[in-house]
Length: 636
Image: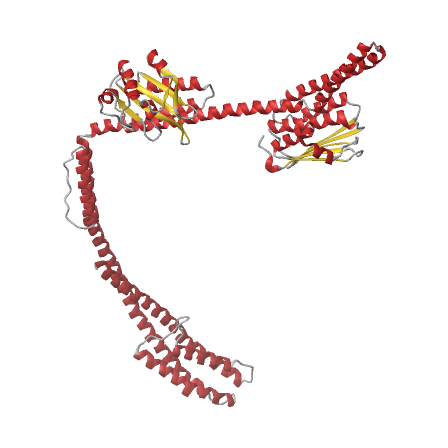
């Protein structure tokens, strides 16, 4: 409220000073114009004299300017600004000046214009009185301006005094309302730094500083309570952090270890050894579920007596706590209470005779408790692992969760190894299939031809027909050589291995080998036009298609010219053309997979996710085109 009142007073005074300044500025312009009346009246007299002399004059212009000056003084001009002060004496004097001009001097000018030079001038007789009236008007306006200037000076002095008083008042109030509470807070903080936790600040107001003092007192009370048992809390937090760091370290090390390649049994043995060391277990097992998931096979055992290991090599899944655990529900068993009938923590139904027998085996071996966790990969149970302790062992929830997570990691590792083994088996099967396909019709026909020639040779020898035998022997030698060359070519093809960027040298080697083995003229057009390099596996399949196509040309086409084109753009394109005898596509389609060479090329194109086009006609040569679109290309 005080600030509002002071602001209103200050704004009023500032507005008054601005109004006075505006009035002074307008009155100053009025003084200037009122003073110009004398000059313009004299200028009219001069122009009147010139006119009476018969000379050119600006009499009318001077009269108009004087009239315009009187009009502006009467009406005022806010744009300049220009106006007469609002005073009765000034208004009366201005009316006297205006009346004297309009009623006496201006008519006298008109009369003097028509008189000759020798006649006396009425205007000049009246001019001194008009000038005196104008002088009195200027004096009155200046007197009024002086009075308003005194008002303006007084207002400015009052504003300066009000500013000083207001500044002192504001400084005092700021000190009282802000500095003093802040100093109290600083004193309180200094006492807290000196560990005087019984410090309290007085709460005298309900404003923000009062709330701040209340908060300070609450904070000090909490600090006092915290300080009293700070050491115990620090120990608890340190232990929690150490446990969390240990769990993170175990997870990191175990994840890194499980991702290393290696056989399943050493992996599980190292996994179990690490767990036993980290959790101070005296024994442990890793059991893998059989295919039907009804039995558990003991894969790894550490710290268990030999008789238990032999007895539990294969056991029904639910005959023991080791088979009762799952990924969601581990089993933590106190064996002494279990045998006595107290049960276990976790999913463990009433004990059967087999379960009681297994528990007694562990008790006789000196184990007091066992913890069992499931080995799972994507909700698929793969087995269990257990930790055996010779003392009673309580498992906190954090350790249970950690061991469950490790069981999932182990399950993923085992699943990956199974998938890798299946992939290797599939790769071996595919390679065998390729070898079987590689022993295609040329070798089979060659062996069949050799068998028939051997039968004819046997008949010729039996008949004593040496001439026929001599004819058959070169045929046998040629067939053996051709079969031998085919076998060598197959072995060379299947031993081909490529790295990224090695396709061009391999293509050159294949072309050179064809030129050595065939009389046909071969031209190679290899263009690398900015396309990315193919990875090694795709390069190898492309090379196999080229080798198979050239082998078919060499054996069957009887071609004179062969053209091979390799273009590596956004799409990869391989084209093999010849001018040989060709073939009937309908006959090839009817034979299906019986024509092994074409079937092999189609299968390799399918592996590449590419498109293979076979085009031919009898007597018009043949064309093989393999297109690998950009969407099917792998990153090299």
